[in-house]
Image (spheres, rainbow over the protein chains, first blue to last red):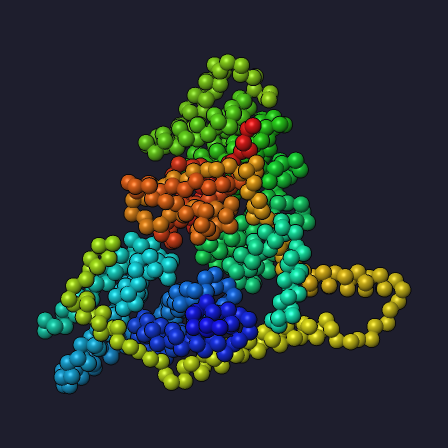
Length: 181
Length: 213
Length: 196
């Protein structure tokens, strides 16, 4: 029995082999954790959202219409979890932004430029509107096509393109401000 | 599930008549599309409707529509419940002989704001042997295009009383829609086009007097 | 499509490269997820086991003659429900159209002009509002015109076009239904039996 396809693992879990679900966790955990990190900005919230997504997926596994595309189905659940988590934890975001000055001072004193550049990117991403951040990450980090993005978010393709465009404009603006100093 | 119980389930499944296995497919679809809480609430409404001898397929369809459009559970339950109420009112107004399609069309018209007394007047005006499904659908459409409810009712009842066929009503609806798209006032468009239908109707060879079928 | 990468330039690509760096959750993440999942599975087993026990535990029952009939009827009902659980639920459905035999349906053409769409389908109460139903997927005929001809049962139906799996669009050429329940407008179609 080939247990390596998502559909085969899902079938085993639905038949009662709970431990097989661990294979799906291992398969998707890193990539989807990266998405949650970019959306939520901190490790704790990202792990909580991802764990919640896996748990919900397990609970409703028998309702996954297309087990071959379990990954996309799980991703939709995660996108929603991140939206809810983002709304609840907005005060954490403000905490992150308020550290901006300290970080900028730190980067001047410690010219590890690659690290500083990454921190600038993270800050800029955090300052995007959530819907623009989501669209940008799905397009440029997760490399989804617009159809897949629409399926994951429930948003129409033209709205998504607009959000990506605005996110790109905003990121260029914020990051060129930094480098023109 | 053990192999033996799977075999037992398989044997039971084979014993189910074909029509019911199609219903089982529909049940699985509802099972797969609604969360348990919503499913239980929808089932309760459907059970009540069945006891009241109302059609249940429209209620299931409404739940499936809500699931397809990613609506939340309470919203789906509220919509199904509202439809059940409207189906009940439709049956009271149209009588026990009304078809499922007529009941659905009447429920939809009520949902759009048509008072039940106007539906009763339409039923009477159309005559006992004429289905009112299409007239009700046209009434609903007019309201959806901002023809005031009273005007939409009056216009459609007048057409039904005047013996307009379903084909006349279909053409009437299309013409009103095009007029409104071109900028006409919805009420004026509906009344003008209705007059046109009645005029053509009295000039048509072999036209029966109003109220006869 | 060519405008997929319209917003690409060097800066954006550099940002994306950084963000694509791998991230890993903590080492015990998998263990925490599986602990949670095992807990759910255990709770489900307890629930099923509890119900089964309640049904099958031997009990002493004092039977009075007039109760015997009631008990027999109740047992029969239970056996029917347990053995036909899905069937009982299925009866409630009272059929999405169980049969589309030609005498009970008509072939209807659905047309939508949508030049920017990548996919168009028809979903309605005649196909369980399933936008993925294979018989209701429109084909692009050129010039932005999408169409599909499919069987629709006799009766009054509500439906909508679904564009790119996400946008619900009423048929501009059909009567409207005010369906504000789920935030979209549907279309109506009345299908009459074929006149022979």
